[in-house]
Length: 173
Image 1: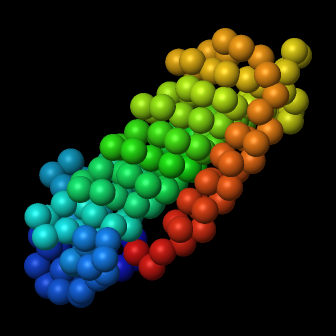
Image 2 (image 1 turned 90 degrees about the vertical axis):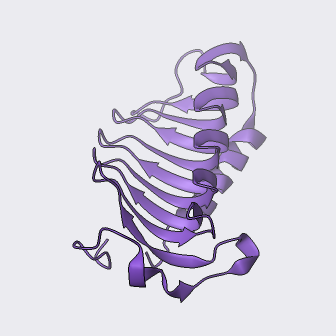
């Protein structure tokens, strides 16, 4: 956020740089909201976050990644103020698709998400790198393991999506 002009309250001249029209983004710049949330990144013609950007919330939560018409959508990384983080796919502002979620206490889930919840196939790994006994791998609904089964291909896809999201988060904003 070093490039952000602390005194700027509008888009003004920082929106002058052209961006990739292929993604629908037409300008790049920063904006500070009334609640101290800040966004730096690409915008569409209607003034909505659209393309790649960085969103810093007032509570310290941070999102780096893709936006579509104002919402986190596509690949991205979210770091929470309590130390938890998520890397993977988003849809309409929610964790949705494949990704990895690490809780602040060190436990992680690698697998599928729907509407911001663990929902689908995946694997739980605890802070001590065990998976529980019996192994917490299988089909989850609403964050609960409902059917045990091996799903290494889903875990591998979640790891790949998280890696792609992480690599995308190294943008110039």
